[in-house]
Image (cartoon, rainbow, N blue to C red; front, side):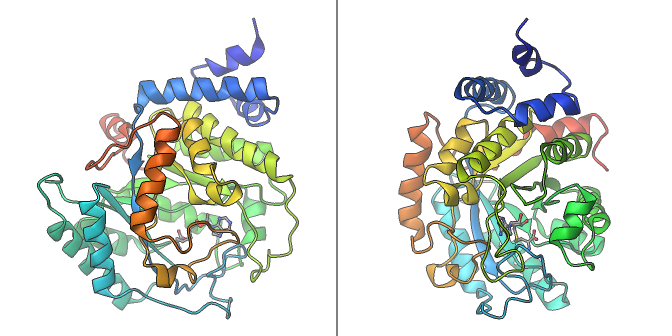
Length: 369
Ligand code: SAH
């Protein structure tokens, strides 16, 4: 029997299987991977695409990730925090547009003022986003970095129910290379465990195409997603930002190969973790204009339209080439709808779009780390 076919239909993929799938290169092989991932997606999470409107509410950050444009050490960035009114305007717009679900993302801050500001915003958004078409109000996802368990509990209690915190890479050596010594893989794992403990649906993910990263490491990343209570996965290419310590690092793969590797990762995660939500990320669109559509066509089912006010977008540049920097949210809505429809999918409006993975793992008693 054809060996690729066997792997594509295996119930339990081994590390070797994952490496094989990630390394597929010929158009006929990648087309087969893609077709299988879409079949699994349809069977497990359905065909719909869910939107999460994202508001990048502050670029103030205490961390110094070597890859990130808003790292504390980048003195060239003008720091901003949106006002309460700006965030509420964005949230109302999100609810009225039918997006169903909102992400609040920012740099990492540990001060009590910020913690309480977030709790306050979450409460207000939950209370004020109830509409006839959205009786449950907006679903709220936070993406605010590593925080103490108590803070996670406070934000969950306020009404946020999902949290995104990428592990970036599960390889200890690579993690240490791209972060300063104060930021550790152990602390990142603890934060993910704490998020599950606090009751969040947990999203994580990695950057793809980091110098020094191998297919084996990426396979281990997927095993990590599978073996922990992870409900959502967001992944995209590592892209250099010039004002960071990695700004002059040479990308190891030609661009087309890095893009294909990202798409193979999406499809392979879909096979290994069939009922999670997978995002077609903005960073994919930074590589090629139709990057998000390609992500969707390899088994992703979520995408995140940007709702940040245009005046702030230029200062929330994590990597070079970030798309849609001057596109107002109205324009963005029309453009994205067209993109989703262009790959034969439809957007599920006015829904939270929780992944089946969460209900399953809680039902199986695997709610915790
Ligand atoms: N401070 C929050 C959210 C902002 S960073 C947090 O740490 O979770 C969100 C994600 O952007 C990071 O997890 C990282 O994976 C990605 N990112 C940052 N810099 C990047 C770069 N140069 N290329 C690609 N992705 C990057």
